Structure formats: structure tokens, C-alpha cells
Amino acid sequence: MTSYAIISDVHANLEALNAVLQKVDEEKVDSLLFLGDSVGYGPDPNECIELLKAKSTIVLAGNHDWGAIGLTDITCFNPFARIAIEWTSETLSDENKAFLYTLPLTESIKADSMYLVHSSPKEPEKWHYLSYEYEASLYFPCFDENICFVGHSHIPFIVESSPTGKIHSHDNYGKIKKRGRYIVNAGSVGQPRDGIPHAAYALLRDNTVEIKRVSYDIVVTQKKMRKAGLPDFLIERLALGR
Ligand code: ZN
Image (cartoon, rainbow, N blue to C red; front, side):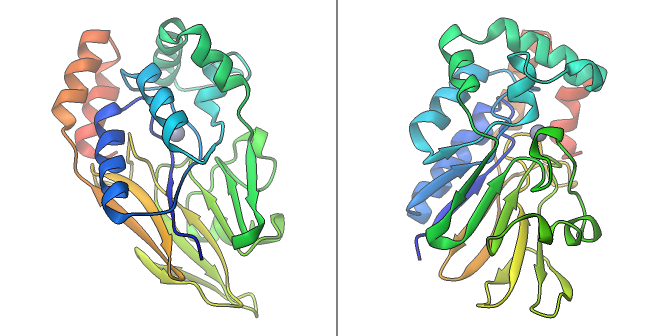
């Protein structure tokens, strides 16, 4: 089986992305997959898009990527997210905006029976949140592959459905069984919200899936955000992981 690092929700946080990319390099994985939300909230949207484009085998679109190029209505974003997305839109180069337009909402890797989507395997363009075990359990009929990777909620989890349909949640590590099916939330690189400020990503190899955490220099990102005039609420939440 090919080994994969699955990352999501970078949100223009270059320090967090660089820290994760370094770890992924050390882990010597075969392929990097990105589940969307390259931009929004953070101070380095152009740099993050360019890095993700260079390093990832697959780059998906998230709601903030679509918001920054006018493909998703941002009036339903919370006020802080809206301010950040308007700033992002003004800051993005034309070339990077054009790149965001090309991104798909979903991808399937048939060889390893994997399905990738930013929000949820049901109606990906409606950006449903798939935050908890119970919610995840409802989405197994919405994809054909054995493992579905999602992001969007910024809260990592691993949920398994047994052949009899029994739902079981793993902490940060799960064995991939032949007849099991899985939904894995890779968490967020650039703005974790599970109470742990360290960047999160998922590692799939040797029939195991693991949620990994990587510390990064949060203060540097916060300083850049302040300089860019991004909202205090967004600056402070990085240190809290909320
Ligand atoms: Zn996000």
C-alpha cells in the first residue's frame, strides 16, 4: 500500500504548514493529499497555495478557497471569517486565484479505496460539518470506497464501521481492517479547534491510520496576523486551539 499524509485546513498559516511538511518529509511518505481550505484566517495565503501546489499530489477546494474567489456566499460566514476572507481576496495574486478556480471538491483513489472531500461525502458543495462520531456514522452510505477522509470541522477523529454496521471510534490510532470502513477527519494544520494548538494531520500507512500533532511557532504567525490587521479573535484562538 502506498503511504499517505493527509492534511487539511491550512488556512494561510505558513509556519504550521512548514512544520507539518518537515515532519511528513521525515516520515518519508509517498504522497501528500490536501483536503482544502488553503486560505482564510491566516496571514500567508499566496505562500501556502504555492507550497501546497508544489508538494501535494491532490489539492481539493474548501469553503474558504471558494469564498475567496466568490464561488461561495460569504454572508453566511461568521463576521471574523468574513473579514479575513475579504482581506484574503484582496491579497491573493491573480495566478493563485485562477488556481483556486481549478480545484475539485472531491477525489477518489481507487487503488487504495480512498475518497477525499473537504466537508462531507454528502453534498460536498453544501459544506456540511461532520464533527462527531454520531454524525460521521450517518455518512457511511454516501461513499463507495473503504476510507473517506474529511476536514472542515478542524476536529480530528477516526470512526470505523464494522461489516455489521457497528460504529466504533478510535482515539488517535486505528488499524485498517480488511472488511472495515472508515471516516477519518484529518483535523486542521493551521487552526486546530480540539483544544490542542499543535498542527494536526493524518498518516495512512501499513494498514494503520494515525492522527499526528506537530508544534510550530504560533507567536510568529500571530505577529504576522497583527501586522496584516486581521481580527484579534482569530489571533488569540491559535494559542488556545479553539
Ligand atoms: Zn477550515
